[in-house]
Image (cartoon, rainbow, N blue to C red; front, side):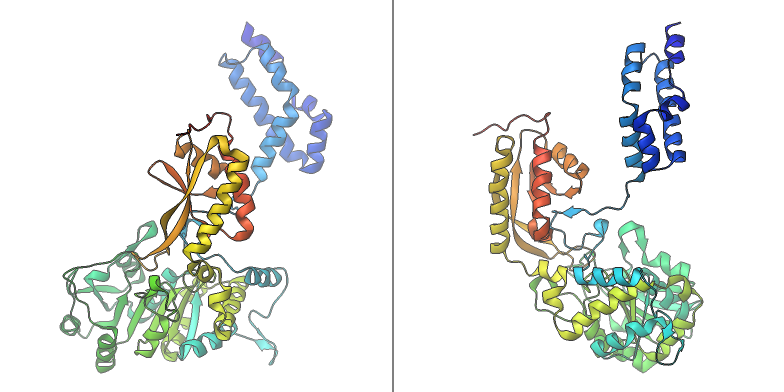
Length: 475
């Protein structure tokens, strides 16, 4: 009987729409959206009433706040899912948060091209249809000294296209030590199978010699493939042929050599963490026929898969019908070309964010961490103890495996569990990603832009001043 009385008091949709606050929501959003959420709101109350979870007084209280409930649900509904995140983890090429951040001047140029028409496939000199690759190919071939270049939507697509075009139904020689798996359960043997190429494993997991490639060659061999193990190292009793040996074997046999270097490191920089990272320039100089790599790793650009090398082989890739399924859009071309301009002018190490982050010294990071700790002590000192400690940053993103960058981190200790504070930081707007080690929150400012430091400060203050947290005990 009580349930029935409560149900009879549920407001109708028409009565809800007559409320002044709800009328304002209709103007701000739309009548259809407001009605949809009003029905969901009424149904939620009905379910609670039938379950005995709500009495008449509670129903009246909820009904009085219907405008706030609807406004909150509408904001959540229409809030973009993809948002800016402050990366205080110290992982520079963090795959889960978008790898290489785009330089502001590159993003600005992308925005201008996105909001207008462009000469994407139009040759302004001839007045006829042009080729998309015209917007970056000449720059890349000048930089690497190769004959031709093309681009796909990511490096997995570039590798797939190479295999499908050059070795469909034929054998590809790959060292057993290079049958990699990267993030998202992406496995080289799987993509090779999907491409139609036939895998011929060469050597063993830890030792492969040039003679193993020679012995494996046959009439069905269409390609020699070398794959950089970008996210792991095999150490100890190991052996692998030099790239020059493979290039000489390729030239001698007439079988093309392709190398997937992964990270998109064009030229050596002298940075200690990148000493072992293969470069596209070296691959081309040593005679690799096709080299492929990512655009959003050490290149410092947008997501893309770049292929560079011999003109005849690149032309074959372009003629593959799958190229259309793998192609990129005008904004990605705009970003790629703008990044390559930085390489042509020699400014890339000063202007691209990932290289700015790589070049930060421990002294600079300590100064910034000290400043942030002092500000935090002023605003939320009763909830936290802080100090600046030695630590390490990571290149990440399948680049420079095992290499770490000495850093100075802000270490935070609270009376609450670090996981509780970390969760609140993820829920902040903008969200903040940090590390937890030995019951302490670690903030690595290497991956935090200076202009984000105020936002980071506000997020930390908000997360630490949660009323459920107790003041931290002093030693």
